[in-house]
Length: 241
Image (cartoon, rainbow, N blue to C red):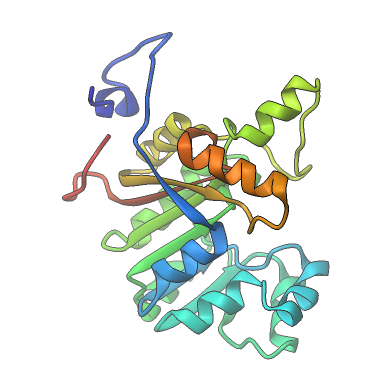
């Protein structure tokens, strides 16, 4: 398979590159995959908050991601700039959360003190005006950690069905859609090199339609709801696509 490293770094250019990514498909939903990946590790959970009005109900029904990661990881520290979310989480008994802007001067010292070996950035960068700068800052502060970044997939089958109807289903706080290539391109801009690319459903299938979508996306993973990439600092020992 043709290497795309030179396209990701900008050394090569094509205005019509046909890129066929190798995507590892997972039958589990995003949360289940991440809970498995963080097991026994020291995890920095970036943007842990979720939407503030939903935190309490998701804690109650067992679906809040930060709670699930905390139960699986050796240690898990959640950071977010949302003061209300941090207060809400602490009010629910979660002490492993901090209000923190990663660009603040004290951020590097906090990361060094916690010493995470895994930095998890789940469904965060699509909300940001400059995702490459955000990931670059994390990579500079934590050059030896593994990164896991997840995003909604622009090429998902759900999006294709919406487009056929002449519509877009969108979280109105999102600023970008990511495809497999553009996700890897942003990681490269941030100084990160992908080890492997994965795809999964956003949530568990509870209907015939959901099970059909899951079967189709496992047959053709580029249709997955969610893209997940595992990455290391650019130039480290990792496998590229």
